[in-house]
Length: 384
Image (tube, rainbow, N blue to C red; front, side):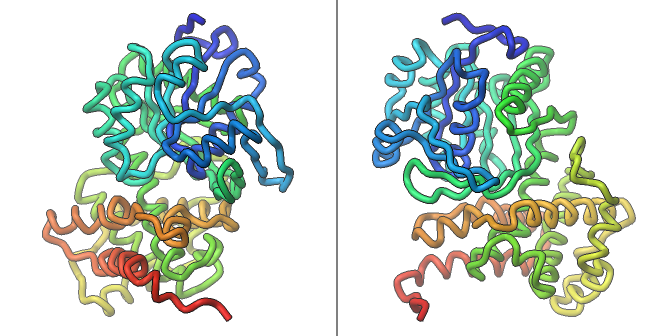
């Protein structure tokens, strides 16, 4: 089967989703049941043998946001790159990397073998630094940075629940005429699969740090409290804690000269960020309270940085609203006693702050609490 980059209605794509976790399973199911893939294959690559066997035996079950369950049968799961080539009748044109950030280096080696010489890798992962790891193996011109706020919950092997719709954006790690066309082709393909996607003109750093700030505001807090994302909105104390954690992250981003403007082309932004956030939290009062609590006068904002803070908080709270029923990925890891990505999320803020000579006490505490929660999992008191 010959494939060429261009409009998706005149080509056949060979797609491999790397990682059978919640997001990987969601994307694989959405893509495979899309009409455009009646003429092609979607393969799910995973080292999780139980999941591979389940998908190949009973199909991949997708429980949609409407609570209807669909069994997607034209997804094949494999655990070796040679099997990917056999099923796709050749190497893949696109690999969606959805593995945990601590597994990126190993996944990159697999993706090199999975992709064709001109194949592209799209990273949909938490944290920052994953794109650079992939680029070291593939070349920057073959890596696309993706960010999505869709929520997904893996109920069991081969069964995933879509817990909330959101926005999805793409940007090439290295901008050329070809990578721009490629991004648009992949964006169209995802949109046809009910994952509405746009190509952003923003830098990959902005896209990744905006998503990082969303994770900073949701993941650690919901993991420590053992709550769904709804807690971020429903509890005044949680909203205050979210605001303090995100303030630190935005401050560090500004110091790194990473602009965090409102999300482009996001139809959910029907109100200005300042007006939306002010209905949930008094940011000026929270900034004063933060200084009173921690004496950390280094974390300050000029007018432009303040607008970025409002824009980022608006994104955090909107994502929490859209995915209110979701258990964030960090909570899912904690509940399953698996390594979390906390060092690649709040931990990134702490590391960069240290390099800048700034203390970020809220994020440092959240990192410590998540690690402590994992280290004491065997002593957890069961619910009555």
